Image (cartoon, rainbow, N blue to C red; front, side):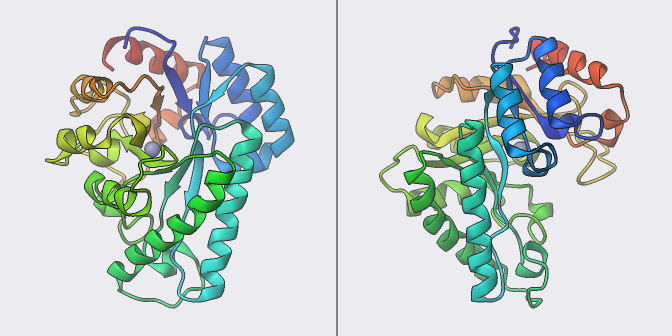
Amino acid sequence: MRSLEGLSINLATVRQQWNLGEAVKACARHGISAIDPWRDQVAAYGLANSAKVIKDHGMRVTGYCRGGMFPASDAAGRAAAIDDNKRAVDEAVALGASCVVLVVGGLPQYSRPGSAPTKDLAGAQEHVADSIAKLLEYSRAAHIPLAIEPLHPMYAADRACVNSMRHALDLCDRIDPARSGMLGIVVDLYHVWWDFELYRQIERCGRERLLAFHVCDWLVPTTDLLNDRGMMGDGVIDILRVRSAVEDLGYSGYVEVELFSDRWWARPMDEVLTTCIERIMTVV
Ligand code: ZN
């Protein structure tokens, strides 16, 4: 990428070392101008405080992680999930975020604790579609786009039952056929790098449906399915090729580094940021 300008740091990357305020200040100190915070980080620091420190440091907010977790086994649980997502949209407005990232949820018992156990994954997928359609009415009025993040299939049961770009884009076609720009997807390399349709589906996105681009790398072997994402350049993903495919669409948005990594959480915070910067300049 060879420039700091388009770099955003997803704050999960430094979540063990810093609170939101410290992370924003450190990013600014390192010349980074954009972040993507998580809801629990915002809750811990306070919504008003978070909005203030972001504004004071001139940070762009390239997404808000995360909404979703829609499936529930009864009407009350489903309504609670929609309400919670509406609050996420409201918070995104307060923070000036460019979209709400949706990790849509898996089987009801994992998405909404207390739900009756089921093996009906197709049912959960249908419920996700209905819920996104409902939430879109609300988020559209708030001018906050919804960005569906397809997750690697290993998370289908407990985190997200939308597991490929094709599935995510099919949902976009169904729910927002007019391609209004208010519903799209996140391309997160960790989740989609293996997909034989990757480049075809990136092309299918078009500019208006590509709302965010998350980067990290896939380590071989990966020793933890959740918390062993690799730093860019340390794994097997052809990041430069995907990035150029994304740019060919006319995507000029931010490249967001998102690492869930016990290895990197154990390092000093400034080292993590300087490494992100160095890699962004050389291998992304
Ligand atoms: Zn992501």
